[in-house]
Amino acid sequence: MDRRARDGAPPLSYGWAIVATLSVTEIVSWGILYYGFPVLLAPMEQDLGASRVAITGAFTVGMAVAALAALPVGRWLDRRGPWALMTLGSCLGAVLVLAWSRVHGLPGLYVVWTLMGLVLAATLYEPAFGAIVRWFPTDNRDRALTALTLADGHLTRHALGPGEPVTEELEWLRFALVRLTRRSQGAVQRATMLEGARASAQTLGHQLIAPLVDSVDDRPLVIVPTGSLHAMPWAMLPQLRGRPVVVAPSAASWSALQAPRATRPKKVVLAAGPRLRHATAELAAVSALYSRPVTLTGRQATVATVMRALDGATVAHVACHGHFRSDSPLFSSLELADGPLNAYELQRLRCPPELIVLSACDLGTSDARPGDELLGFAAALIGMGTRTIIASVAPVPDAGAKRLMIALHRHLTAGDPPSVALATAQARMSPRGYGQTGFACLGTG
Image (cartoon, rainbow, N blue to C red; front, side, top):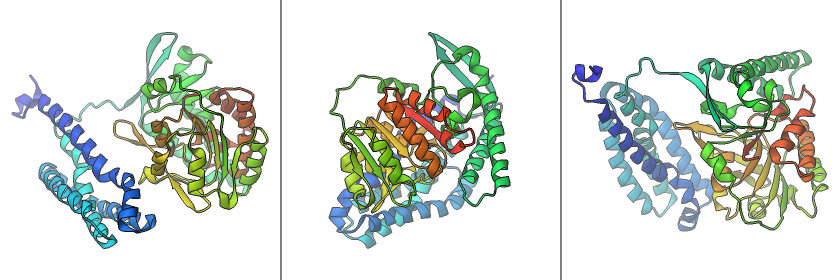
């Protein structure tokens, strides 16, 4: 007999009905309350006659209020459940969206979004999951990692063991990579960090790749990760060194990117941001490999100019500081001459680049939301139709990135596919240069 029926609780099918309902309402809520702001940013600039910085400040205030409200919302969920909270939040949200549409100045916008922060805390994922878990048993929940390999038409399931040790080891690896980019490290500290990174990479390779060797042999791989594995520097794992690897958000998206497209005129765009010691030299060396590229450096490399150049590009290379925002992935950015180029601004591209190389820190990283929905700079480009992105999931040393990028473009111009070009270039780098192995080929290769 079903335990819930024995305890007098509604059947489990009622819980699935809740899941279906919340799936629809969460899509609508996120679309209007969260993603609506960057979409409407340009119209708000025109209507309010205010700068982008001033307007996005209201969104920032809303996020801060949502964060501050998290603790009281959590206490409410624990004591009273999510039903009344989500109902009140939805009603207030509807009123505030109407008020937002009638705002005529910055003060009103800030008032609306201060209150909207409370709505975000009361209606988005946290209370929704609070509602869902009440209807599903949590005992004996499978937390193990499983890999599916498809090779030569054969689909094989592999048990990889518990996921928690993998997550912890990946955190240690990323910690070591961050420390290795700091110039203040002495020789002894650097040697210690290198050894720690090497040990973590070996452990992760043993846990994740070694069990698959019999199925995949030494062929090129397409990896569709889950959860925190989207931040894995795959090229660091011993079993994958020198092997072409493509990292895709899903099998469906990878398959869609294989579809043939209309040939566009060849257009190569090279851009460099400020405050990078080797960026100009990197662009000069890469520029020599192409015929008449569009090159933007110094004050020329503004957000507007780079956006215009990227539109319709077949190959793009951007060397600048990158910033991944785990708290708000759509505000992940490239640092250009006049300020940041944010991920959400890429939506204005009519024809995104076919291949873009981001010679920057961390911009290959995406925030994996529930259901493995990815948000971030690279994820935004893939979602818009960019076929291939070469970007790093870790901090990158400037000098090491320069050497890798020059080698990469030499192989690209020789006709190698992007994943092959990247793997070959990485394999020829010094084993001590762990920063270069943070780069991955995303999308298709």
